[in-house]
Length: 202
Ligand SMILES: Cc1cc2nc3c(=O)[nH]c(=O)nc-3n(C[C@H](O)[C@H](O)[C@H](O)COP(=O)(O)O)c2cc1C
Image (cartoon, rainbow, N blue to C red; front, side):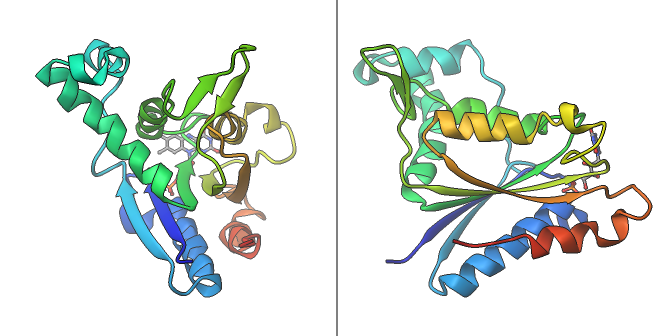
């Protein structure tokens, strides 16, 4: 079966972006394994999601047949993003470190796709259950510092957050590909190559 890949980029730095290059390398390896893979790309820097506001949130909770025209238009932003996630088998997400967290464009996107009754629900026992099933996610991260070990490990609010929020919507198979230490002498020289070498496509 043809694999469908959804590629979400969030760096605004275009061709200079390390996460864009790393994401590109992940896509290449996916295509080596699945030559007929189809990739759909969404660049959050070029086409960003609005912050959640009263209209957006109200549109989610209004029954479909009772939505105002404004709510019907607002909900489409989230619906369309979720349709892309439902249709894809594999996600590749570029996530630079911005002030120890993900860029706000990526956070806004995640706020639109983490939707009660659509991508997660609570069971009768009150347990959350993710509704995006049988997906695989690769996260391409880049950072000036090193976060997999050493004194800054506790300040990685990128990988624990992404692992948790993706798991919350049902995406439990998440691999991180990191180019870290891009500003650290003795580390930066091989940071990107190390990231590329760590890519394993299952
Ligand atoms: C606004 C901004 C905030 C950043 N914050 C951090 C940070 O908290 N920790 C870190 O290690 N690097 C930080 N960096 C460095 C970036 O993570 C690094 O340049 C990375 O390559 C950015 O991803 P990109 O190349 O895909 O744009 C920051 C860079 C910018 C522009």
